[in-house]
Image 1 (cartoon, rainbow, N blue to C red):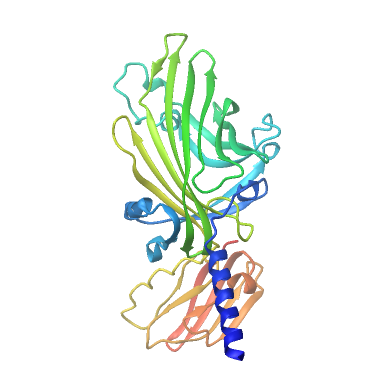
Image 2: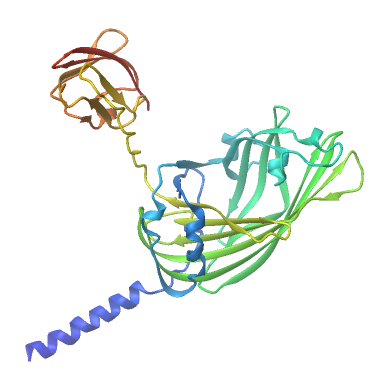
Length: 376
């Protein structure tokens, strides 16, 4: 009797557990970034190789891009209240810097030079480019932008906000919205942008990345963008229409805000959008050290990488092992002294404060002196 009693309960637990793990997540405002967030994203090295992932829609999917995601190129997205940015007039919004510098043509998706007389004079340098957002219980929307023009911060208010996510968001939900704003450059030009965003929560399932495994809802948003420009009060000239498709995986687990994985496609005119960028959330990972330079003869040693942030590697000749290494700061005080360090020294931030050091290495064939920098 014991086996007949226990076994069905085990089966029932497995069924309940499986059903729970295969439930489509429902998203609300906790999945969107907020002011104060610092989110690190890595850029996958070969974006085009992820195109097959886009076709994997539907319920109860299992996505695992594998090692193709692994990258050493990362960027931290910091979300700040508008009052902490140059665009304090956008009070009530929060934003993130999208670029330190750009040009007006790049901002409009145009090539650096156009075969239109007089247009090249408008290719003005821009600085401190920001996107600004507003979040409430019903939606997460882009409501403003900021550009630096002629050294002055120029806040740009949307007269029709770009609604990125609407809440609650469930599998197979669809939404269509519009957006628009204008930029006035006195005595030069007026730029108008309008667009339409068509979104579909087209899939859900398990996503595995170097950051972890999450139950995700996939959102696919197709954005059509139309810019026009009017020079010194003349009739508006329509610029080439652009299309951008964002396929984003969001989760309601672990307090993770922002997409866990995002694939971005871009196209212009009649050219179909192609995958241009793939980025994924991850924690900081120390980059792999560069290979040591070839040491063909004893009598030299190389410290790398230099500057260093986490792990210091010693490039040594096999016949010239290092028996002692010491770091002297710029005041002449020994900050670190190690015997038989081997080929690497780990946890540099715990051992040495950021700064410049004189390094002395004692080896079988002599004593070597090097300059070495620790960065924050």
